[in-house]
Image (cartoon, rainbow, N blue to C red; front, side, top):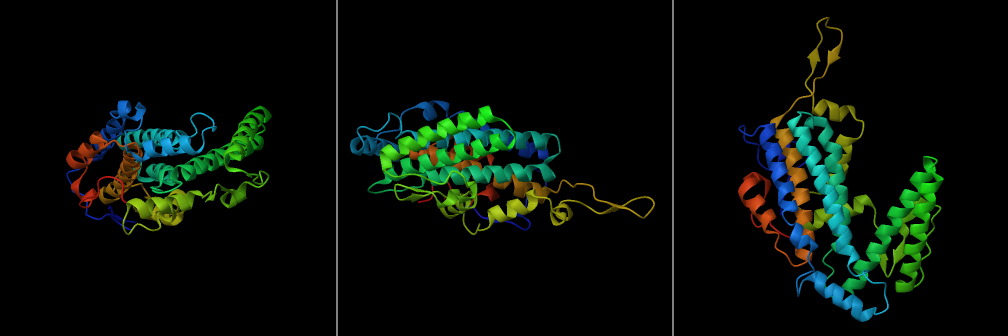
Length: 316
């Protein structure tokens, strides 16, 4: 399992020979490792994998369920990781443009949020009813996403977009009712999404999802979401942490140039890459694939201080 230090960098201090261009190359190689898995990602789950067992169990127990419902949890999890890959590419470009000190933090926070959603969808619910639970979670995730989309479209004055989102929401709620029985959440109060329940599963928020990711994949990493929020939101403390005081010529005004601090950059890129790689492993391992390009990236390309021993793969 991997450790993060939310105060001053990763568990080990960054080596001085790594430049921002070096870090950009490391990030790019991780994105390339994910894209190299295209064929495996498009393939059916391997026999004996959690995904294959879930698919068979769901079809056996729900023979009249809509086609594809049993595939949806890992299909949507894969799409989330693809979105994470786009964020990873953005971090690569920030590194190449020397804009990483402040602009990377909100992107890393978004990576953590997505990692939390994937972890919740594919949490290793091994045992009786695991497929049922995962499909219930997918319905909750999709319904909550559609409600947020509907509210957002209403807020910006787009009734057409709001109506389209509402129609999709109505359809997924009807499907959930067919599969699980009564599901009638209060769609008038978006702040009550974390009270929704379906098939015995409770919808969880972004923070709870990240906490689950921490529990499954990281050691001594509690509070990552609070930390990433503190350096992403408007904060004088965050500015002070990433800048260097510089008195102006007249001595009356203090400027604070943004600094590219090697240890800070290492902290940022370690967090981004570890969050991404752990989440990508989760999706691949759920389908029964080892994810060899990801293993090669961790073994041959990632700095050795980013991972502790035996950190590869999904933590059971």
